[in-house]
Image 1 (tube, helix red, strand yellow):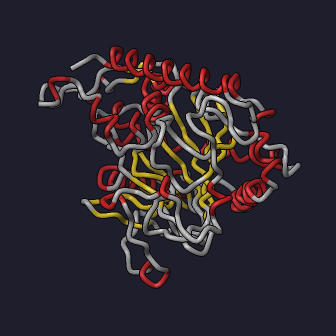
Image 2 (tube, one colour):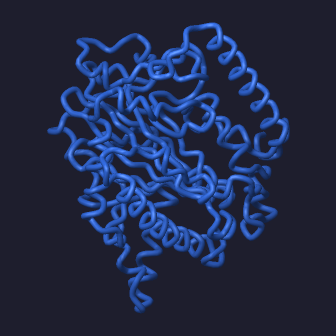
Length: 394
């Protein structure tokens, strides 16, 4: 099996070759940066512009095994749900509620890889205001949004696809991606200028969610039997990576044929999701079945990413999830990614490596790791599984 560095070198070569090929094609074509951002393999179509179509275009129709079963609101209440954990117990000086809360988080990480948190310290008003900002953005005239069109080089800005494979089957969603940390990547000029109060609200939201991420990371460290700052330090201390992807899922004429976001595990460290309170859509794979998450009011949905799976030596595992779409209603969600610093090698904590459980993964930086999804788009857990050390693949 190739080393992680060899895998990265090969992926980088393919990625560079594909981008250079696309640039050569674009240079021969009539340039129109509003309707066809450079470097994408094909002209970009905004899914929002297709929401009133009578049928789903072929480019969005998934193979039969990947198609979802649409769940009506009447069926939704009968489904299981991921654990809901009250974080208030972590704040007091009483050891008993603190221990109980840590135990709930540990069980949720081991059994689900997903959980919801309430009483998390982020103002409900700020959560609502941030969602309002993004709804206003996605309902701006198309020519204003197109000014922020992104490219596959950084994905930063207004986008409608993941991956650069020509002819790929696409997901039924648009999105906006921006960097929050490190500060050197934080560029307000790449954040939406409309609505005019939006940048201030998004900035404040980011500060509060970063604080929440730090609290949860401490809990995960303690539950793994490590020092409470171990995972934070492994991520780079205060010099972590943090970014936001706001997902917009327009209504869909045939929701049983497509997905808002294909099955995948998150490549980063931990995701803190603010889901749409009115329209369900997130599904988590549990024991081979897809469970539709019921968001609790003003809760965040937290899930383990691939980097924590690696650091924990697979004690905690990232979990496949996907998004279904709705025939009558749009849906909005905010995925905040709390990630390691991009150039730090991530590998299993030595405290979690034993003769009975040797290191499952070779060292790899997050920059190297996330190249896979930027090249290929979401593909289940194929990436993290492919990177297991050779002695763990037999």
